[in-house]
Each structure stands twice: as C-alpha cells, then as structure tokens.
Length: 203
Image (cartoon, rainbow, N blue to C red):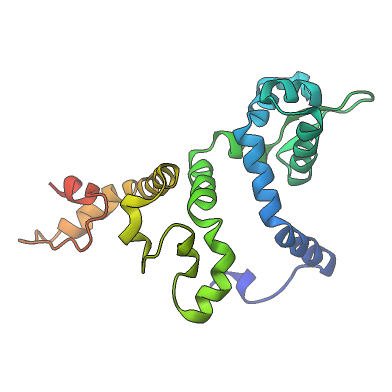
C-alpha cells in the first residue's frame, strides 16, 4: 500500500492549497479546455521563445482581448503557461502542464471524456450514491445504464466515449490475448461484446 494512504505528511499550508485546487477544480478544468479548444495554447506553443501576447492570442482565437487575458491568467495559475521575464507587455510561453494538455493523447482523451460524457451528470453524483442509481445519466436519456442508450447519445458524446474506450482497451489486448489463450480454450464466451474489437483481435 502506498505510504501516502497510511499517513498525512502534508504541511497544513500545503493541505489548504490542495483544498483550494479542489474547490475551484471545475472552473479550472473548463478554463483549460477553453485554452485548448480555442487555439490559445497552440498559439502560445507556436510562439516559441518569443512568447505570445494577449492581443496575439485574441487574434488567433477570435475572442476578445479581455477573454483571452482571463483565460491566460487562469492558465498561469494552473501552470499551463509561464511568463517571460521583463517589463512591459505580458508574453506567455507554454508550461509543462500546458504541453500535456495540448499534445498528449491520453490527456486529450481523458478531458474530452470528462467534459462530454461525465461533466453534466457528475453534478448528481451525491444523489446517485444515495439512491444507488445513475441519476446523472438523465442528462442524456431515461436509461438504467449508459450502454442502453449508447447508440442514441449525441454524436460528440459518442465520439468521446469510444475514443476513451479504445484508448484504454486497445493497449490491453496484446497483453491480455496470450493470457486468455495461453491454455488454448476450445470456446470463449464474450459477454457484452462492446465494440467487438476484442472479438476481432481474438479471431
């Protein structure tokens, strides 16, 4: 078991800082998504060592300078972007966290899944736990499970669902196949089937 689960070694000031990150997490998430999807992070990345100013980010993204400035300041607080030293006009460069938000496939898949599939329904998480049923699923339809309505989900939600599903299941197949077929079973019953990718890999 990981040591962090056994004892609380955080300093009180650090614990309070972590609590504030949780308190503002939904807003921080949406700001990061807006920085990515509006092209601001890419503009900052493309600017290289020269950095990107707020007016330049606004021009690339097609949003107001005020809006670009608000998003970049939030990105600064999250470590997505960093400031170039010096006086005068603020110029932003890409931070390490911003690089992963912009370029990393796993991060993109996870963010899209969280935003498109889970975000609205997560508001009912407390109610779901109390009732023992997926109350948040009602944002998409009146189904007992998401699988019943998978074919009827909005197109963007479906795309994010399958991208998430494929990202994590596809990388497991090469390791799972030798284990499942190592003893040469005569028959295999695939319950559910999902996207049929496991069946195809098996064939």
